[in-house]
Image 1 (cartoon, one colour):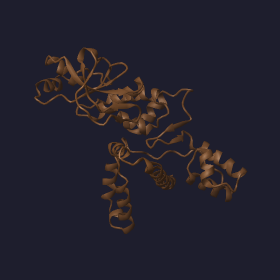
Image 2 (cartoon, rainbow, N blue to C red):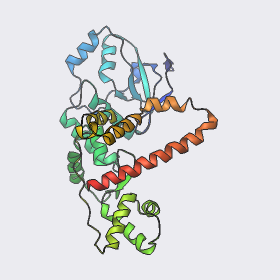
Image 3 (cartoon, rainbow, N blue to C red):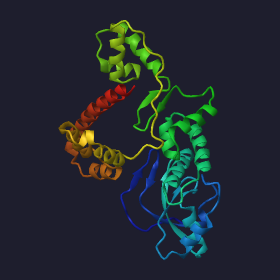
Image 4 (spheres, rainbow, N blue to C red):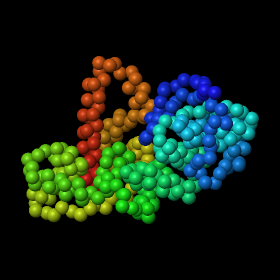
Length: 314
C-alpha cells in the first residue's frame, strides 16, 4: 500500500545533513520499525499513557525512508497502535543511516522527553565515529553535551584515523592543530612576501587575520607560536536568537552608540531556514545572480570581521 499524502506544505526542510520532507503522509504502522533508538530505557509508560489518553490529534512522526526506522515519535506511534489505529502520519527523512541517527539524537535531546545523560554520552560516542570531521562543539550541540566532554570522549576513542581538520558549527573547516596552518602560512609568506593576506589565507587554510598575525611575527623576528589551546566554549551552542538576546542585555553594548548600531545590524541579519526557503522561491529569476553575489560579498565581510574577533580572543 502506497503512503497517502494528507496535506501539503513546503516540499522539503533541510537539516545539517539530509532532508526532512515537510509533506506528511499516511503510512501503515506495521511497515515502520521502532527497534532502533538513542534511548536505552525503552518506553516511558507514564508518557505513553498520557499520549494514549490525549484527545489531541497525533502530530506526524519522522522516519528514515530507506529503512522505515522511526527517528522521532516512537511513543506517538506506540500510542496510536494501542488505540487500535492502523495508520499514522509520517514525515520522511532522506539521508544516510548515520545522518538519521544524528537527527534522532538531536530531536530526542530537545523535545519534552529528553535523553538521559548516559544516553547522550553513548550517542556522542557514536557521533564521534560517524561524524569524525565534526568539531567537538558541533557534536556537543547534537548530543546535548558540553564540548569539553565531547573532547574527552574523543580522546578516549583516539585512533590513528583521527582527522587533521574538523568542521565547525559555521560549516568552516579548521585544523585540529592550528600551528600547522600557521607554519604553512609562514612558509608561503616567506616565498611570496608581496602576496595578499586573503590569497595566503586561502592556500594555507587559515583566516586572513591569522595570516596578518604571522606576517607581523615574521617581520618582527618572532618565532611562530606553537599550537594554540582553544578557549573554553559554552556547553551547548545557543541559537542565534538567544545570542542576540544576551547581547541586547549587555550594558556595554546597549549604552553606547556603536554598540546600539551593532545590535541593530546583528538583528537585521537574523534569518531562519524557513525564511530562507520562502525568500528563495519568490526572487525573480533575472535578479537571482546579482542578489547571490551581493549576499556572498556581505557574508565575506562578516566572515572577515568574525575572524578578526576570534583572533583577538586568542
